[in-house]
Image (tube, rainbow, N blue to C red):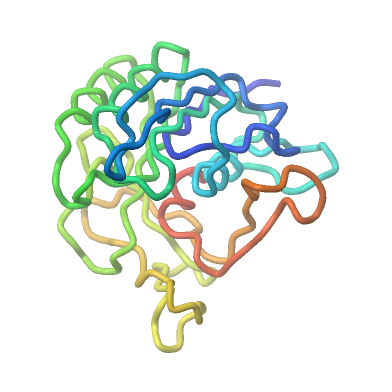
Length: 239
């Protein structure tokens, strides 16, 4: 059985991970050179660098099922396209994101996951908007994370662009996830406040107490980790 192809436009994915190696259909690295904390060149062939965020998102979307190890992704029969547009510590390049979105469509993606925000999360990025129009005109489903500032903020982009399914995060009690409340589930000082919300958010999905694939270990029990905060980034690939 094969599901609809999902493109993960994010930072790098550990394509050798035991729960991903058999579902990655194609990988592309748009971030071969970094200048002033921004990826400025591409494209490049696989293998791509193994970054944490992209590996987490790919695993939640499509980690292989029935292989006696690890976890199963939400769409565990879906082929995964992995496109790296950042390193995890670089500022997003809207132009590279746009190239990756268009490239995903050309290579057969039926769903595109965007677990990132424009360089200014509540400001638009026209390059990405143009690429989204192209994807949507091809009847591709586009899913975006709503952000983690924890307030009814102004709409975050690209999640709130017309046609994109904006995804917020819920917790284990089926309420809006709020990770860093004084009595909240996360004790880490790094925990973000909570899921964004508002009329522009289309749907909520689990974003707390997640099990993740690791980017630096590919096999065995140590190839997995977990935490109380998944965020809207982790909620989006579950939709």
